Amino acid sequence: MTKDVIMSIDQGTTGTTVVLLDHDLNVLAKHNQEFPQHYPQPGWVEHDPEEIWQCTITTIRKALELAGVSGDRIAGIGITNQRETTIIWDRCTGQALYKAIVWQDRRTAPLCDKLKKLGKEALIRRKTGLVLDPYFSGTKIRWILDHVSGARQRAKDGSLAFGTIDSFLVYKLTGHKEHVTDVSNASRTLLMNLQGLDWDQDLLKLLKIPASLMPLIQPSSKVYGTTKDVPGLPDGIPIAGMAGDQQAALFGQACFKAGEAKCTYGTGSFLVMNTGGKLVRSRYKMLTSVGWQLNGKVTYVLEGSAFIAGAAVQWLRDGLKIISSSPQVEELAGCVSDSGEVTFVPALVGLGAPHWKASARGLISGISRGTTSAHLARAVLEGIALSQYDILKAMEKDLGKRVRLLKVDGGASANNLLMQFQSDILGCQLVRPKMIETTALGAGFLAGLAVGFWKDQQEIANAWREDRVFKPHMMKKERGAILARWNKAVQSA
Image 1 (cartoon, rainbow, N blue to C red):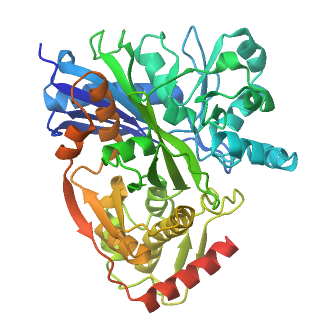
Image 2 (tube, rainbow, N blue to C red; image 1 turned 90 degrees about the horizontal axis):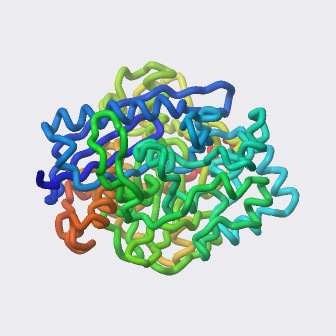
Image 3 (cartoon, rainbow, N blue to C red; image 1 turned 90 degrees about the vertical axis):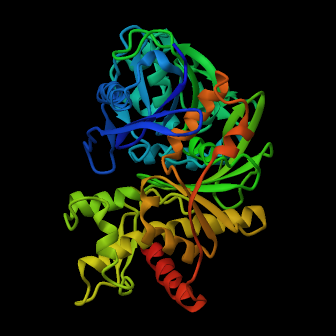
């Protein structure tokens, strides 16, 4: 049977997407399925790992069915994932010890504050390139070990395994055989040394995490193992590419050169820039991470993350019920020419870069008797874009130069009103690709390169396709007024 298909599994915060690609980047099938979100307490966000696994199996089957493709044609499988979400499971049974603690979860804020007071933030920043925040996996691991009866002793005995979602899926796909992660995901744990590309013993000790719990760190493009006993798939398919969702999106956007950048609009929004082999240490609270490791070379990135983007539109749909589906927000927001001076700060689970304020909460200001649901919808879209303004300006300060072009992707990038406002407020061009699901595309590329499906990155870059370019048209005075209202609102959040 000809191996002429790459499968990409994009395990995201609200659902799993499986994409089947051919050599010319044609999408043979794409299927998404949502899974439940669990909110046991304010500020806590959890997933059930078994629900994620069953969702993944179902989505794989449906994608193959839609494409009319048999599993025997799959040359390799790539995985991309919500990065910092944390699972600890039993090595023998594969059963999770506790629900997955999601990257949005803020329960470890007190531990982060305690470590800051002990003066550990600079050490963590120097070793990992990250800030000390509940966002990352390290303090989540510590919480599970501290709060689940018997967990710490079982971890010391070697009977438990930690992983971000990539590790968990590889473990399940290989029939409980492989316990691995890639450098991009490992760089988001607060536990990997950015220069040594291995688990840092000082940080493991600081957070009281046994080394036996940790997966083996691997390159982003490599055969990690093969499928075994996966419903709907034959045994023996290489699992050959892994990257955290934002690094995968950068790779999927063919941002292979230093200085190229993209912004992904998913549940949250993430602006990432390729800095090449140079490890850039931010002075303005950007994060430094590994983008990918390929052919023995490491590519580093600068990143700024806003925790809420598409999730704010979901809030309008599910919480306020002023729209019945997410795509309706563009039509509703388009009913007015501006937000009527209403400003929305999307700090529903705290503020990310460059503010890093875990205690912040969402805020709506400027409401008047004339405010309508359309003004609120427009303010929500503008709040998503304004969060990126703060991030990009901080990044430009780190680089000492302006960013003139930004590639965009993710579900919300299909919203033309949002993209035009984003271009206007940033004052730079936005380029949207033909395929906006670039996280899945990047994971597929990494897997395909590992199994020889594509020859090299240049072959991929030549096949990458542009959809639309957005150019800034907003007058300087209008931009200044909007930013003044935004800055005032952020201070109050």
